[in-house]
Image (cartoon, rainbow, N blue to C red; front, side, top):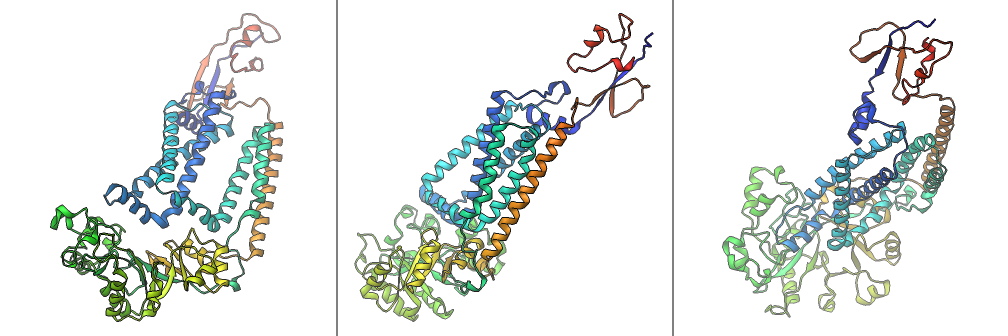
Amino acid sequence: MVKHQPLQQVYEKQLCLSFLTGIYGCRWKRYQRSHDNSSKWECAWFIILCSTFSLLLFWAYFWLEAHNDYNQFNWLLYNRSGEWKDGTVPILATTAVGFSYITFLMVLALCHISLGQQLNLYWIHKIGVLAALITTVSGVVSISDVWGDEWDIILISLQFTGPFLHIGALAAVTALGWLVAGHFHMIVLLVYLSVLLVLYMVPLAITSPCIMDRNSLKPRPDVIGRRGAPMVILPLPQNLFILFMKASVVPTVLYSLDGVPFLMRDRTLRRTTNIAKVFPDKQHEDASLFNWTEIRSLNAGQWFLESDPYWTVGSLTGRERNRMGNLTVCSLVEMLRLTARANRSALLNLQRPPPEHPHYKTWIMDTLWAVQRSGISQKRVTWTPDTDRGRVRGLQQTSLEKLSGEEVRHRGISSLTLRYSQASNKDIQDFLVNNMSVMVYPVNEPWLYSVLWCSGVPSVSSDAPQVLRKVPYPIWLMSPYEYCLVWITSDLVSIAIVTGIFIFQKWRMSGMQNYNPEQIMLSAVTRRPSRDVNIMKEKLIFSEVSNGVTNTDEHLYPENGYDIGQYK
């Protein structure tokens, strides 16, 4: 005879699983979750999520490395809009938010796959993923249009970050082996092993000047302040009267209507002076169409205190603020006198006046007159324009173009001044073999300075020389033997871990029987109260008494397939 007992159906709460499925797919209840295979539609959304994550990762890496040229980006925006503002702040903020959000969804999706849960991305998240994808694609297209040359910094930065990115990618793909081994699919397995094999061989394609013998390291490159070194301790822009005691300088020079050379990067006076108040009707005119008396009457320091373009005004004392607030535009003669007093040199970036300018034909003589009047040695002044070099033989000669050795000798040039994207490691070595000095600009980040140092560059031009002077040695330097040792060791460790994962997962899957992820347990024991479990009692009424289980028993829990016969 069958003894009837009240059965307790106990559901253990799974807060972690509820959190994962609730956040990802708004499936907070147990009955909403499923272990069925994900639909093709949801698999497609997972692919879109992975693509968005990869694109955002690339986008975030680009802006991280482009920090060296943020000032140039803001300058491009100023030329387009006419308003000076830091355009990188909203880009960095939206990138950080979007990348964090997509990364969080990626982690949730991978946890779903690991636990065997069905993927079901919530519709709000789908909108968020699409918004992040469209925004990032729009950003890439816009940067290609406005700042296309900056993409070069990715390849250059890989010379510095390549070995470390390789180890990070290898660790990530190795960890993904847990998911691949736990959900065996032949196609996925082949793709996974192919990617892993490629990563094992990637170091063969990695080249970096920092992989070299330490004894071959060249002397530390000289640091020259570019355009007045606007980020030095007194962080004044190049058009202001400043004591250049921290670095040599590369000022941009314009010419007033009466032939006075002065320092000004902008073609107008609107951004860096108070011309809108003094000459409101002439604020959009070319700076070269004002006489020196008019230019000298303008205040060229107050804008800097108000806009704080380099985030350094807060470090100034009250005395320095007062001095800066009363500064005027600096002439070339004044700058060269200060440079000579500081025993520094100057590389003149001269901008020829427009054709309608009265000194259009005499601008070279005006420059030489300023150099002579300042009293600086001609050996400390470097001439950059390619026109009329024969008239300025007493000055040092350089070119802003990438020239061959034959052209350099023909023009009588002793050095080259190149943008960092123009000077590859091979080019630099060729220049040095031909006894040509090379200065690379703009170099504002320690990582770029380290790469160029290892390449053998004699000097660099920087907006932030005070930052580079804190780099006593390349950030990292490895001999080829040390790098090969790191490469082989990381590959062997990855192979061992992946092999162990697959062996363990195979053993684990073979030992699993009747796994119930919800851990719903039926018990015939006496009811025990608890605040942590929900207890449901059901009376089982058997229509027939027999030695086996009746047909009624087989349909009590058809969706879960529980065996009730053991409780008779």
